[in-house]
Length: 535
Image (cartoon, rainbow, N blue to C red; front, top):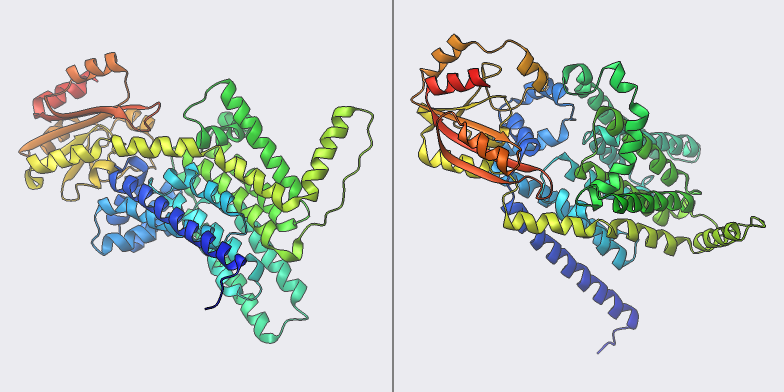
């Protein structure tokens, strides 16, 4: 019988531990996904995909400000007959696939891989919260894995870049760097490549470029179409402060339950220090360093000026750090040398600091892995807080409200009435029901981003006579409203309801700081019109 070598034994143990981690991760996150109740942004994408044809999606996405890929995936699933309950499973599947690639393909040591896998971005924000962001880590790790072999597989590499391009606008900096690098590879190797290799390389570049062209036409005019995007000059004059705040908001959103004063400052300092150290360590790996720098500049401009940082977007910053480190560790053509750094100084602190930096640089692989591990380890507690809270409580009450309404009121003679056109999280679970916005005076299933909430209140859309005539067509009038109040204010809000409250809920959308309350009222035309006039 052949004896198993020590090396093979070690490999078997490592593979076994990877499989155990994958199973534990998959089970923990699947329970969270199956228990999760969708909120506005998750449901909005599903309902838009469900209620629009493939052809009309393009016009809607201009106002949404999102590329098409996520909506295309959802449209295929809605057309295949899947219900809204399947949406969290979609993000779970993509995230599990991403984790598999990390566990079995990553050049990092096992402990670093495990810290990444159980970070907040993977354990909750992309595996349980079902938004387009779950696609970004998948394409990032696929690109990182193929990067050293990109010249052998240029078409596949181009397809991955095209896919990544059409996930989210915040990723555009990476796409630009990867695309320019493809062109540089083509020019550099043109003379030595065979005709076949040249054809494949050009095809890969055209494929990647087609993704950029598609993104351009999808989002052409988005800023003008979306009424909630910052456009006025007075707001843009504060862009530098917005960028600065976005930088500090990333670790707060990814690692902390709230802005916790001195703790937030310390976490931000540690995070920025780690970014700078990683940038220093990968400085001789041109592509990795440029990816890191360009992405962060683009991200800070986009989320500091046009949008804002949320936990999903903050997690993407961490994933890009992982991508840059992965490429630096695995791309043998661009390995940095181990030259010692010497700076003479009479100041002892500077000498000690430079010695520390020199030691990090001389043990490049180990230092890069340790710093990457520290960054992701900081986020682990927050991810598990969210995950276990989602096990035990309702992330949003709209699913429970939808279940109550569906069980007690028939769709053919019931209309769901709301102030704004802002209840896709109800509409996604109630595809057979009619929703009517009292502000816009129109039926809807998802929010129209071409009109801001302020505009809805300021525009003279409401016509009492038209609303009264519309309400007379229905046997049952159900008014639904959501608000965020403290205990005292919510009791006053419930007491002023336009009719009998048949369902209510008070909880926390993010389990930490945003108290969310919902009421469902069975009302009459007279009570509702009186309520509208009062408020």
